[in-house]
Amino acid sequence: MRLLLAALASLTPGLASGQTAPDPSDWDSVLAAAEGQTVYWHAWGGSTQTNDFIAWLGEQVAERHGVTLEHVKLTDTADAVTRVLSEREAGQTDDSAVDMIWINGANFAAMKDADLLFGPFATQLPNYDLVAEDEAITTDFGTPVDGMESPWAKAQFVFMYDSADAEPPADMDGLLDWAAANPGRFTYPQPPDFLGVTFLKQVLVSQVDSDALRSPVDEADFDAVTAPLWDYLDALQPNLWRGGDAYPTSGPAQFQLLTDEEIDIAPSLSPSEASAAIANFQLPDTIRTFVPEGGTIGNASFVAIPFNSGAKEGAMVVANLLLSPEAQLRAQTPDILGYGTVLDMAALSPEMRQAFADLDLGIATLSPAELGPVLPEPHSSWSTAIQDAWIDRYGVN
Image 1: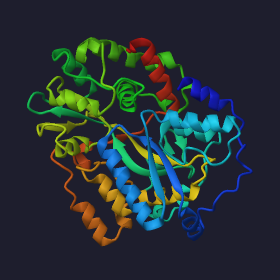
Image 2: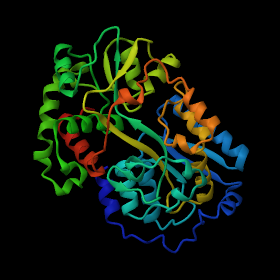
Image 3: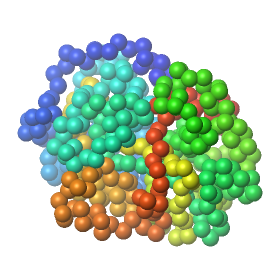
Image 4: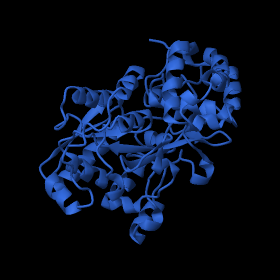
């Protein structure tokens, strides 16, 4: 990631300015041009439920608009960013292998700064009128979105725990104490996994009351600001699963550890993930969810379109369908995805509002009131800096 960001920073913006671009405000023309296009959506492929949802979306967009959606499964979003960067360096200004990316955070900031994105388009999608705009929608990890990516899901950091074996700690300091009293029973995914890095940021915001986190990391004294984070992790490390000598590779990889009773507590980025996993027989029905006092980090997932996509219209049609009440309701259903919606309930029809209200969120899902306050993400540059520092200090093969 460090090398990728440096390469992006060296690019001269504006190389795509001569390209003929579709007009998102002329939706009839977008629909006409989209028919027959194939959209290669580069998106995380580490979850069966996610893959199934994308397959369903592909069926819908094919039936309604004649667009073929191909899911290119990623383990790291940076791989798609690197692909677009390589194409630009090779002078490939159209017909990219990447038509749409599931993106946020540092990857979005890097692509936006290097002028590698098509747009603005998001706020002109017909279904964007249904979106509930807030800071997580208009600002992505401290970077203004400016219509360059379209939201489609919300997340808030939580912890899963086995209620048959553990009581949830009250706060993040309590988690540290719990781990010391129950060595080997807690873990988190190994950075640079997104969930693992978010756990590091959750620890940081719980230990540091600093406005510096809202600004780029190079404007702060990194060592001084993050010292409490490393103190916390130094104390936690020997009490992790396998003594910190190994980590799960992803969020779903923690399911088996919980099921096999190797651990009792694990982090999650979705308040409904535990309920979804229980419904899909991936976790025992004793798993529940808690949030520490003081709140947890929340963010949104977006889709963005590279500047050199050859199927920009088709990608916009997919992005718009992702914002439809039908797709959002399906995504929020626990045994499908359990993702938080980005829609404003007041903007929906009475029938759709009732459908959302009637949705059973599952036995392990906290209500919005129980989730507590949503804390803003640190500026995206902190993610990369913290990730790299963690790898230098604790990284394992």
